[in-house]
Image (cartoon, rainbow, N blue to C red; front, side, top):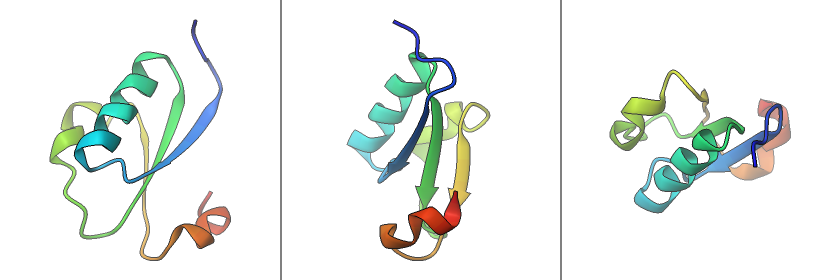
Length: 68
């Protein structure tokens, strides 16, 4: 099943489990929006950076609606 035009927001996507979730969502054609802290290490997502929307954010998830 393909999920075109469905938007997903992921927090924690730069860690091991989160990065694998992001990879799976991208493979299923979700539009992935990743919220990360400024100091986050993106090395686990290097191959996907052109396929996701990356929002660098300093703060907590309670400010999520202000970001998107």
